[in-house]
Image (cartoon, rainbow, N blue to C red):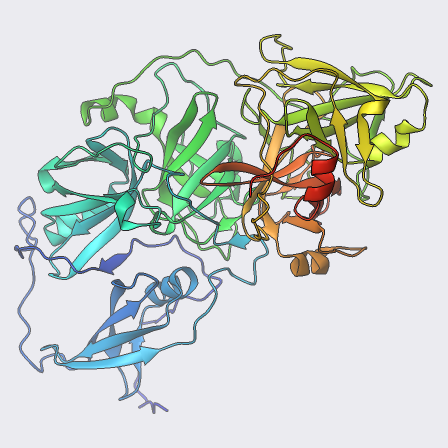
Amino acid sequence: MHFYTAVFVIGVAVVAAGASDVQPMPQLEMLLNVTQEIRPLVEPSNNISTDGYNVFPGQFPHHAQLYIKNINPNGATVTAGSLITPNYILTRANALRESITMYNFTYGYAILGTDGKMLLNVTQELRPLVDPSNNISTDGYNVYGGQFPHHAQLYIKNINPNGATVTAGSLITPNYILTEADGLRSSISRYNFTYGYAILGTDGSSAETRQQINFQQCGVQLHPIHNIATVRLDLPATLNKFVQPIRLPALSDIRTYELMEGTNVGSWGRKYLRNQVMVNDDCHEQHPYANIYPYNICTNTYVGGAFCYRRYGSGLIVEDDKGPILVGITTLIYWCEVNYPTVYLRVSEFRDWISMNSNYLYTVFVVIGVVVVATVASEMQPLQTKVIGILKQELQPLADASNNLSTYGYVAYPGQFPYHVRLSIKNGVDTSTTLSAGSLITPNYILTQARDLRSNINYANMHGYAVLGIDYDSSTEREQQINFTKSSVQLHPTYDIGTVRMDHPATFNKFVQPIRLPTLSDSRTYELMEGTNVGSFFGLSSYVRNQVLANVDCSKQMPTGSIYSYNICTNTYVGGAFCNGVYGSGLVVEDENGPILVGVSTLMYTCAVNHPTIYLRVTGLQDWISANSDYVYDL
């Protein structure tokens, strides 16, 4: 216990940062085993700058240096404090809070005495990264080798002989990295930064995939006003599966990227999350501290999740039919205990500056905007099969204004999900058509849910057709429509799964391809992996990505009914409440070998509520699928 002496103090107040007083995350000062020549700190452009006075031993005996250990085995966050009793140090909260909430801080040490001879350990119980007070907080998804080959980690050397500032960036050519400027500017102006190094291929799978390349202060170019910079590497990167530059928006690309899916890599390149790009006006309304300008671009925490592993300088990536595009640089981050937007610098506003400060060559493409709408859902009940009398109807947006997590998903570009199939089922008795979905697993067979087929199969003239290579313009180059009959349908006697044999094989091309099923030896549950589901009855397909839930957690979130071992669920809180879901559509995860179909959608709720989506787990049904299709399983 510390005892206070009564002293009158006028006009002084001390405020500690509380958990609810959320501020932007600061840059991290990290300790690493690297060295550098120490240079004076004085800023030559400022006549009154000074590196202060030397401290003699014992002059400030209360001063303490704190080294806070984190998830990096060679790293520590460095801060300072004051010794107030033999047992306690008073310090600021932000550095400790960041290490606790983001980096699983377990212990640290304090150096007391200005000669640095006294070293004492401190400890803390390990806490999980995800904030339990926020349902949509998440540590993201694991990155597999080569998934984001543009991502770079930058280590900027400073005056501390064992120190470096850590930030992130994106490789835009073999020689240049695009990143945020603040970490570099601080190291140059305050710490006489002379050099650093970039680590490329940061997937964490093996040392063989990574490249470490130095850079010098003379290779750094900082924008004079905005938080953007380029870094020229001492040697060109060797391009391979794990290291590749990313393209920037073309000069003719005038898109705002609003409502597109934006991907951000964090945590030393080993975690990522996808969030919906926001309209800037909406971002401005949700932002608590800063104004949002045309040179900013934001992502919506409610549609995707509150990412606990973001890193300054990391890129915001969208994807179209030509591949990934770097559209933003992370400049403002909040803790994952709150749901404020993440703010990026918009790359397209700085094309001229990037051209002058790198060797990036811009190209010109003509891009036509598309507006997507979808059908209206029912009240808060499980979604029913869509049965319509006339296929053309006026379409309305589905996003539910009462639920921040509701979304009609992202527009799929042609060829993005070449396995996805729309099924139109007719029975010959009336003029109605039942609409469902499925996944192409071989040139001849589609895997889907059984319920819609079963409700029509008792009619003598039951038939239908499958639409593959779905394209809004019904291009014959892309879209294939193939009939099927009652005799070609096989339904599982117990579970909600069926196969459909088409009248003739599909023609494979960029827009139509089968998807693989889990191998016979694949024993994964897919928990916490990123699951993709494609929907929409009409027009362009839309999709959403949600985190796969552990079945025990899914049971807790379900309002009614039970979850069994043959089910697999996705978490609406991490990804969003999808308003465009279609029964029979597949749940797909991805690993280093590509996409895998792991589930068939069987139970969905309206996007007004945040209940899990339920799928039938494909593993465990291998024998039945083999017997009722021509799919050949890999071992």
